[in-house]
Image (cartoon, rainbow, N blue to C red; front, side):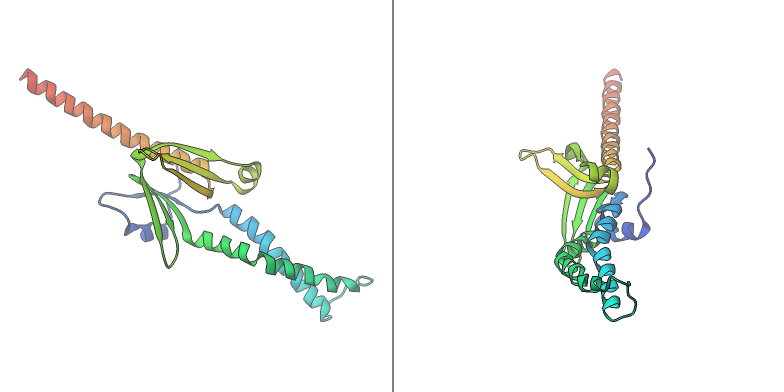
Length: 200
């Protein structure tokens, strides 16, 4: 399966977090469709209705026999104020949440000024689960990715509303398989070397 290469700008930002011989393979964030649909509902529609009511109130235009509509402008204005924390959080998520895959590990980078980085080696990931509701699958093209890592504590990493979760899951599985195949190849070489040395 072919995947789009990560944007050059994002690759450059992540470069300083990479080790020797490590390459960024895939970068995503919260789903773009999820972001824009929610921004339209939470911000743009109430904002447009508020402006329409303001223009009607000041007589820029009017609807004959429906002059009372201008007084309803207070409703979208209140909705806009009420939604402020929601769309502000959405903007912060878009700007500060980055999920990246390299040829060695999975990375979560959160924050703009202060920053939190969580990494998990691909070899430590035991399985990946996608959780999608009907709306997430068919409208937003997002989902929740649950990554289980090996170890005594069996860590569970949950990523909410990630864009293209199926593609992200496939990428993790493909990269993990490549690493495992390279290990098998090294083991075969060692075994061959031992057999040759014995027969010499």
